[in-house]
Image 1: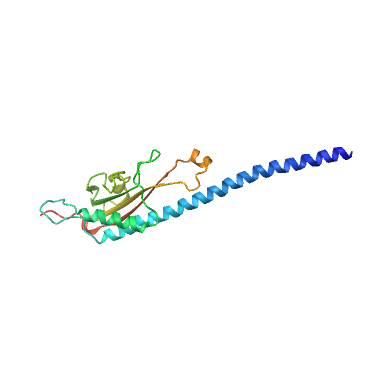
Image 2: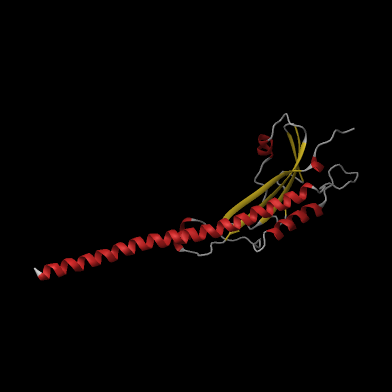
Length: 201
């Protein structure tokens, strides 16, 4: 009897260790996922702030050079907004090099002039790209669909930030399922009075 009790007690201890190992593994994976997601969310908030701050600043600027050409564009407007977006995102630094199937980080700026359902984008339909790694993810059709076609003529500035979030923990379980870097895209759209279409004399 005594030997049977000892054997049974030993089995219980072994079973407890197996259960602990399984539960602890799941808990550690959940903890690692929360830490990784927390870092990603924090950096996403910084990127949204950068896009929003640049778009707010662009509202008071004029992207058009007053020359004889009808669509002369001021490159300083675009460079200034992209610099402001990058400076606002500090400590995040954009990495413009391609890595692991990701084209590289970028800031894309578009100026839109809307008259009814007629959408004209400057400098072109892809937007102005700081590092030539990305094009605008917001099409002219999407812009027109978001606004009321009966609304008065309006101008818009769109600032988009593309960022490849490098996983901090580099856990093999996560990198096998989720690509590293994780592509993050944030944008901000603000009204731009300088881009409002005006009647041609």
